[in-house]
Image 1 (cartoon, rainbow, N blue to C red):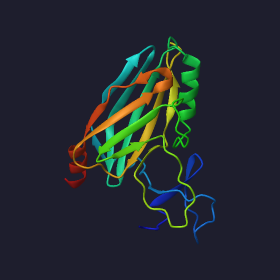
Image 2: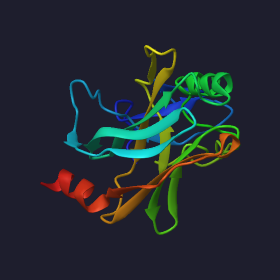
Image 3: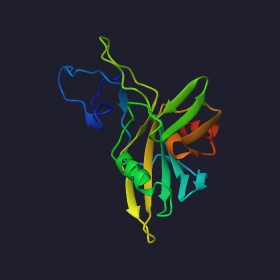
Image 4: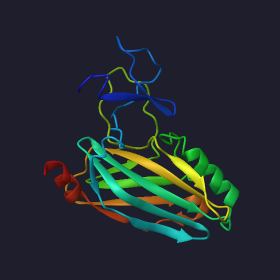
Length: 208
């Protein structure tokens, strides 16, 4: 595994920070290294059109927003939440979605928060809800994971509702077969229609 400070960051709390120079630090937890996401403004990777309506009802709409950004190390995608003032439990949902713009990974799995997953097949399911690894004596390795990433944001719409965007960074690249993206939020009764992603198309985008 590469040790370059330019290629990986480590997660401390809710934010990514570049690894400090010099010897390995003595942090109380060792967490997985993650590939650094390129700046999509200057390096958008290979853009693939992909969009899907995942849920609509009770004043809330959830969708996968185009394009999908493909890089050699992983995928960058967006989930959009459109919350109307008429939504049941508007204040509670708005509060969670607002906090989600500052999150990276939900380290204590709970039905009180939305769960986004990508099923890679072969028992490999990437999830935004995953416990932080416990301290280990051995060096960490590059992990298979799905994280909320930078560039999250929100805006207020004309009717008093809100639009939130959850950018997601998934790695590594998937195998060349069909993938399944799901979004669930049991507490508010949200079980989205699964979205199918073409893993073969994603992989070929990096080889052409």
